[in-house]
Image (tube, rainbow over all chains, first blue to last red; front, side, top):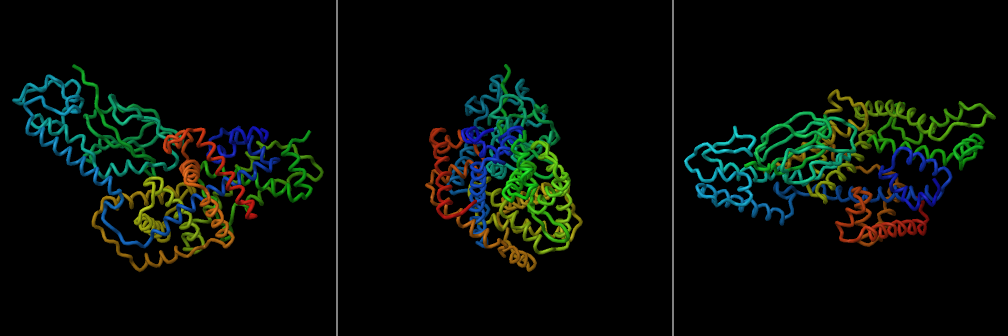
Length: 252
Length: 280
């Protein structure tokens, strides 16, 4: 490696961000023996990173000793207001559905879940639900109410998802999307462990799944359509918290 | 024909101080990279009942390597082999020194606890910032409660850790649980106990050597001379480790523009340090 190559390809930056493969790393380190400019650049970058860390550290230290406020202090006011509006809106849908369960006057998101064959019968008879995979938990009498309830965000877990974990540098590859039509595959990179514990929780804090899985595993258990929170944990800590809405493709 | 590394070794054996400094610098660089990749803390090391630092331990290892070369012998080892050898040797040293460090912690050694609390405070700041994108009032309280728990468990209990990675992991589990507790608890009132107060006083004492503090101030001033875009880009790129294209999307500029601004920001820092006569 020569200096021009190192400079043109921003090798020093990539080195500090651990973006080089082992051979490139060794080649750069060997290059440092004879290249003063790259040594200077590396020291400059390290100082910059230290400076950025110290900046955040100072903010952290100067906040200490201030009196505690209510639990919702951590959300900016606008997000609290948005959450209230969202919950009010969902409650309104919930009440509307409860009062209109005989008719097919459902919100678009609900009609994707309930097959057409289920709407005409109001006497509580059997419904054909080929698209629903977990029928055991469904109370047929309150079926439409339960469905709406399955999608209400849980404020506590919404907060966790907001926390955007980057502990141990884990990068999540899948699931990529927020709304899933088929059972999710979970895959990740940038951490040494081959197996992690996957925890899936519904929006009522019920744990639906908690087992060790290998990287790149498709979930096999049945899930009802709804909003779920999921976590990847090693033996010491939670590495990531995410959420997905499960809306399987209905089969007619 | 000797390559650069072999020439360096030859000069070092001939007591060339510049060569020795370069050898130490390069060795320190790849050891620090190894530590970063494996999340090992190099400042948590002790030997002979006192804290030690990486440079001292590296020096001992490299001197041992040089002493094994016969006088007059021309070094033939390749750099990659030297690196592999040094990393292996250092892993064993680090393990031993980290164990000694935890023994100091269990004995309630003040210097060791200051080292731990300072580093965990910096890492906790980063932990909270990366999750909330800002620092809230209660974050430091949560950190203090977590340190208290860690302190109690180590000094009074029988905890042992394989390495500093598992030690940090353990602490961040405590911090995470404490944070979740705070999120769930709307009306909790925090009462500072006497022992907690003492621990807080203990942690408040800044142990940074004066030259480190001056360096910190200089770098802080230099960063403040950058414009908002430049500060944001450096923070996103080096602190939050985002990719350039993601930064470009976030701040509404093209990737090329972000690349240029980053380059200019680093040039400005470099110029400022030269003008102030500061060598990073």
